[in-house]
Amino acid sequence: MAALPFIFTWLILASSKVYSQQIPDPQGSTISELESILFDNVPVVGFFTGVTPCTTYIDSTTAQVNNSLGRQSSAQWIRAAFHDFVTADVASGAGGLDASIGFETHRPENVGVALNDSLFFFSFFFNERTSMADLVALGTVVAVGACGGQNIPFRGGRLDATSPSPLHVLPETAVSNNNLDGRLPFDKSVAAFDGDVVQEYLSGTGQRGGPLVTTTNETERSDLRLYASDDNRTMENLGQSKDQFASTCTDLLARMIDTVPAEVSLTPQIKPSDIRLTKPFLDISSNGTMNLSATVVYMDIAAAKPAPETLSVSLKDRNGRASGPAFKITTNLTADGGTGLFGPTHAYPLTTIFPASTGLSGLVIDGKSFQLQDSIFIVTSLSSVTPGVAAFSDQFKVQSFAINITVASSSRSSLAASFALAVPQPDNMNPRIDRSTTLQLTPIGHSGPYTIFSGLMKKDLNAFQFLGSTVDVGAEGLQSKATFFKLFNLMH
Image (tube, rainbow, N blue to C red; front, side, top):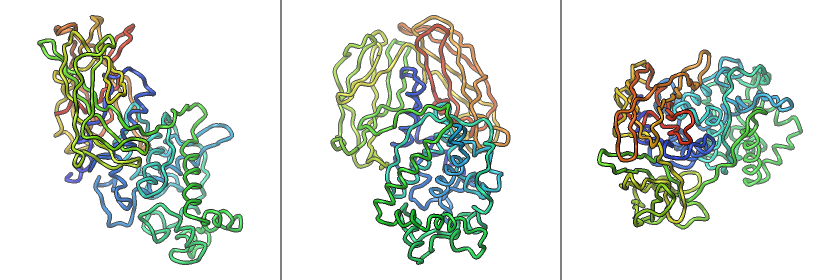
């Protein structure tokens, strides 16, 4: 099990976003969660690690990087999205990018390790707000961007299929013995998303279009039949220029990932912004003071000024009025950053103390407002999960986790915790969310204007499942709820 800390270490370091202090909004938290994956690429941590550099390969059998096999995760991720999408029946609105591929990895057209490797990696980022279908789509966006391609417009909100697609649209001849393990290159530039495969096919040089063009078995020349089906006119059009290839592929891939079942409504396009508030935690002490900790992320997008060393922050009290003097938060412009698809990012730790009597309804950061709520929140200093991080030494071993949820609420109404647990599915590589577990919370005391509630339960899960599990806390009739709190953040 020596390999496992590689993946789990980044997730521990990443300390994933939580939204229990933000206004409950399922679509908003889906967008925020996807923003974090798409825009935040700090060193050693995150989704980009799987394709950085472009030639990286993460082996699902070991959870380790293994670049000795000639495989690339970036190519696998694009293949996974295509094989998921291609079963769509566009006329009827059935299928598309819906993660049904998890049920279909045994089909002849889906043989090889690419799909299992991809779904294994994506599942580390799965939770109630981030579907496997969104992650499969996001894999294409990140793979193309990390390998030098154009940024593909991305929207979230896809729903995971609950059964396999009934359609088999790819013939077995579309997958040759030469490409099942992804070890043969299609062009000379394996570390870049570019048009070299087109140029080499048209000129008959280099790899001449790849193994599905050049194989001696004529029945397996599926790419050659496709390329030549219109007398090479499409390939010649793609080969006109680098820009022509890039823009055409960006448009086609965007249309591919946006092909979803008719009942799915995608979010607006997720676009980068210069300032985002991430990981907000509220806490309260016995003496009636409250603490907010968070991380502000600044991105050097094209229209923004370069990241400053400091940002100005001011609080809004429970009634929306300015509360207390503004203060500065600071970043190390050299060390506290990363480089994503849309520009360098910088992290500004934020910690502040304020009276529980005044409360908190939001922040203003460098002139931008962020709305929060303090009516109900999980008290992290009094909540816990055991065993702690040591449980991740074996990702598949089922263990009994003791989960202590302690909540501060401005209402005295009885509260219940509702869990969204990531659990395995039969005959499917993908996990699913189980919402059948609830826990009644009991009042245990008061602090300032808040009643403190607590509850303890045990749940048998493996560490792999635990990563994607979250909790909501509320009561029937209460407008405010603490939503989408990741249990992982209670580990020590």
